[in-house]
Length: 513
Ligand SMILES: Nc1ncnc2c1ncn2[C@@H]1O[C@H](COP(=O)(O)OP(=O)(O)OP(=O)(O)O)[C@@H](O)[C@H]1O
Ligand SMILES: [Mg+2]
Image (cartoon, rainbow, N blue to C red; front, side):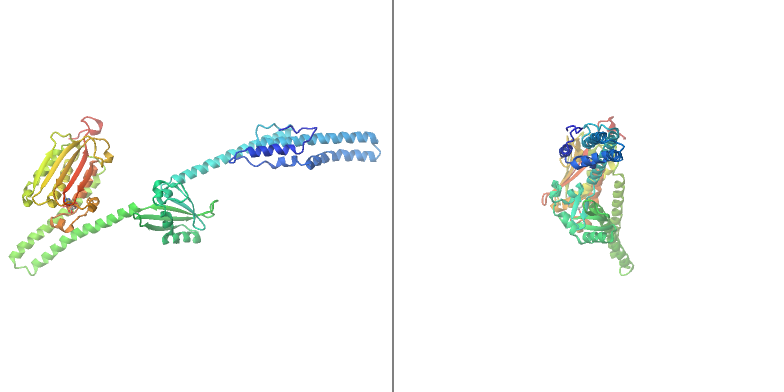
C-alpha cells in the first residue's frame, strides 16, 4: 500500500487497498468487516474538512488582528499561509494514520500509525480483534463439540420446524429411519420410507401438535409394523424460542422393541406356566370329586383313577422341578463352570440310564464316542441334564424301532455357527434320531419355554416343553453353542459344541476337581 503521508494527499488511494485486502480474506474467515474508522479517509471532502477545522481558529485570529489594525496585511497573509500549510500537513498525517489503522485491522503486518495516540489505538483495536477472534473460534469449537455429541447419541434425534418438516436429524435417526437428502447408510437406505411413516402415525402427529400448541413436552408410543414389528417411545420437546434454523420441536425416539418383547415373553411365560399347572390340577380336582361321589364304592374305578391322579401329580411335580432348575441355571448363567469334565463319559452314563426305556419303543442307541477326548470345563450335573433331555426327546419323538446315534468328536476349530468361539478347539457332542423330524418354521423357536411342535403329543408323553430351554441355558453357561438341524422325514440332529479346557496349570483353566 502506498504511503499516504504528505505532501500529496491521495484521496481515493487509501480506500482501494483495504477493499482488496477484504476480498482476499477466505470466505469462512472470522475477521470482522472493515472498521468504520477507515471510511472518512477517502472522500475529498474529508481532508478539506479536517484542514478547515484545524486552520479555522488561527486564521480567524489573524483576520481579527488584521481588521483591528494590530497586524499589517503582509505579515498577516504570511501567517495565514503558514497556518494553512500546517493544517494541511497535520490533516494529511491524521488521515494517513487512520488509513494505516484501517489497514492494520485488516492485515496485522501493515505499517503502524505514526502519531502516538493512533498507534496506541491501533494496538488496542488489534488486541480486541485477537480476543474476538479467539472467542469466535472457541464458540465454533464448542458448537462442533455439541454437534458431535448429538450426532453420536445412540437414540434417534430429530428437529422439526413449525410446519412439522424435518430440518435436522442425527446419525442414529438416519440409521433407523433413513433420510432422504442425507448421506444415508446402507441400513437406512433399506428403510427410506420409515421416517414419514413414523411421523404420519396419528399418535405422533397428535403429540407434536399438542407440544406446539401447549408448549409443553409430550410423549407417545408408536408401532412400525413392517418390515419387522418395532416399537418406539417418542418424546416431543417444544423449542421455545425456536432454533436459529427454524427448529421448533425436538423429537427423541427410543427403540423399545426389545423391552416390549421381554415384557410379552414374561406375560406369556406366566400365562403358560399357570396353564400348564392348571390343567393337571383341574383333572386332579375332578377325579377327587368323582372318587368322593359317584365312584365312592367302585373299587375298580378307584384304582384306575388313582393311577391317573398319580400321573397328573407327577407331571405337576416335574413341571415345578423344571421351572426351578431353569431359574437356578439362569442365576448362575454368567459364571462359567471351572470343573474339568469328560464329556464322553457323561454322555455314556446318560445313555445307560435310558436302557430300561429302550424296549418300550423297540429303539436302540448307537454310540460313537471318541476315546481319550480332552476334557471340557463344565458342570457335570448340568451336562448330564443336557444329555438326559436330548436323549429323552430322541426317544420320545424318534421313530418307533429306530436308532438314536450319540457321538462325541474333537473339533480343531469351532463350527461356523459358533461365531463367538472363534478358532478355539472344542468337543462336539451330537444326538441324532431317525424320526419324523421337525418342520423348518419351528426350528428357531424350539428353545423357547413351553414351545412344543405338537403340544398334545408332548403332553401325552409327559413333556413340559421346558427341556430344550434348559439345554440352551446350560450350554450358554458353558460358553458353548447349540445347533438343532432337522428335516421333515429325515430325523433330527442336536449338536452342542463346548470349548476345550485349557492345558492344566495354565491361568484360564485352573482345575477345581
Ligand atoms: N428329536 C426330536 N424330534 C422331533 N421333535 C422334537 C425333537 N426334540 C424336540 N422336539 C420338539 O420340540 C418340542 C420342545 O422340546 P422340549 O424338549 O423343549 O419339550 P418337551 O420334550 O415337549 O418337554 P420336556 O422336555 O420338558 O419333557 C417338543 O415338544 C417336540 O415337539
Ligand atoms: Mg424334551
